[in-house]
Image 1: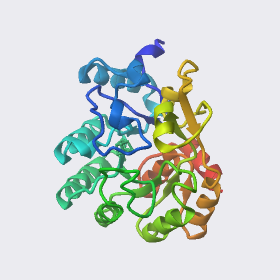
Image 2: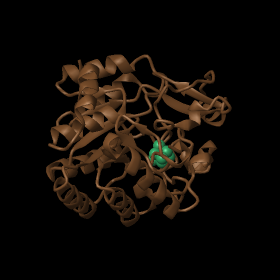
Image 3: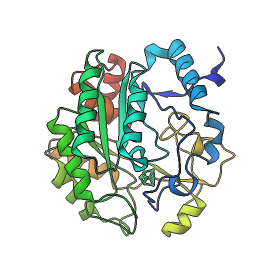
Image 4: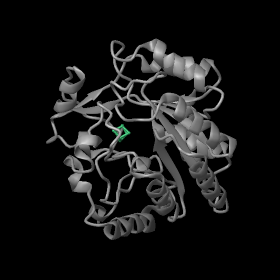
Amino acid sequence: MDYSEMLPVYEGHMMPAFGDEPPCSYGCKYCFAHTKGFCQDADQLKPGSPAEADRQIRVTLERLGKWVHCLVSSRFHELFARGEQEGLAHVRRLAGYGKSVSLLTKAALSARTVDELAELNNRMKEQGNRLAVEVSFVSGRDRPDLEVHAPTVQARIDAARLLAAKDVPVGACISPVLPEEIVSTDELCALVEETRDVMGAYTVSRGFAYTDEIDERMGLSMLPGVSDHTTHNHTNPLVEAPTFSHWHLYSDPRTHELKKHIRRGGRPAFSRSTLAVNHLIRTAGGTVPEYLWQVWQREAA
Ligand code: SF4
């Protein structure tokens, strides 16, 4: 089997990129996507064209389809920063492969876009699939110093409420968890209190990858790090390839306590988005393979 033609699959999830991802205009300071867009070390992953990306996806599904139950929206840019119609087109394209879809967004989705996503989720149910949406946060209060052009926290929570009201499985993704002196525990707990009634699950990211440039921008000082799985060769070859030693990995020691805090409040919390999304899909009645559900149970215990 020629694996070079195939996309990585991690915990049943596959993240295709179509090669047309622009730099992200939301401009979050901790992220590489606004300055580099898709053109980073990940160029190795960049398909030559959407048609080539489509071929990679089909080859992977043909050979490993039984191990894939969810296609993940690109983590290289905010889908809806390009415009709501463009974001919707991307989500529909992913849904066209006959699997569940996981969407990560900071957007202030309009009621009309929420309706379109809800309609798509309803259509996906016919195949046992679901559209799971994770709304992304770095704090419970607006931090334009960190998320320069992103919608307000309240606008994101409002979008989550609209989605949940339309029966779309929705969770919160707290990522990255930055050091206490940048985002305080109080800000994180405030987010949990404010969103607990609407979120079906939380991801509290256990690691986040930075470049030297981002360290400097953020005033962080970190050693080079290698992610065991968190973002691309399972979802991030950026930090996995030893030649990319300018990638650093930060894991905040508070993530464990924060997950416990969320669970005490009655909501599941996971350190990986794949698990939170699997939970959202399964509890909404969608298909998640049994062996992955057992991984979920171990993590949730
Ligand atoms: S919205 Fe997402 S992709 Fe865009 S700059 Fe912020 S963290 Fe990066």
